Amino acid sequence: MTRLAGKNLLLAELIVVMLFFSLSAAACVMLFSEAYTDGEKSRDLTYAVILAQNTAEVFKASDGDTEKTAQLLGVFNTELIIYDENWEIVPAYYSTTTHDRFYLSLEAQEKDGLSIAEITVGSFAPNEILYNLTVAVAKGEQT
Image 1 (spheres, rainbow, N blue to C red):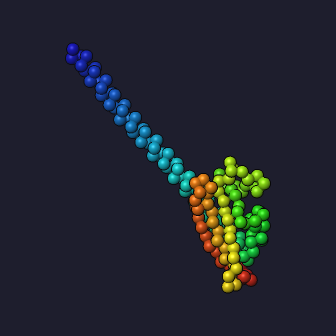
Image 2: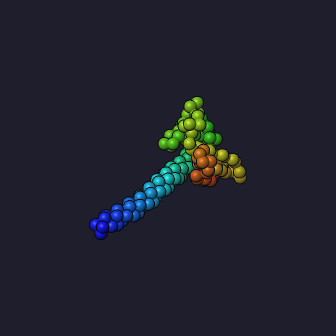
Image 3: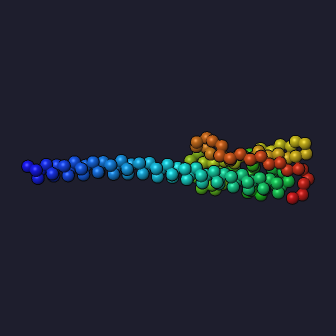
């Protein structure tokens, strides 16, 4: 009889240990999925900052001319440039909602001899602004 009770006790102990390990594994999976999501957000923010800074540099190099900026960036206009999930430019004629993930917009205005541009990089899903940058160039300034 004691031998049977010992086996039952061992079985109960094994069940408790398996339950503990199952809960630990579930917690680890949740932590890893959160880490993956945070890594994706961090990657997107890094690309958004680099893209906005590069666009600001091109805007300054083109002396505040949006047409020249668009030409140097290799796009038709700077009002809305669409990027896919790999941060590659999606051509305007190929743009569909399945490929569109991020956007860059450059809104320029002239004020007091300055050409001021508001550069915004955001994502379509979820609809949020990732990075925003304002740059000003004195008209006729040699850089």
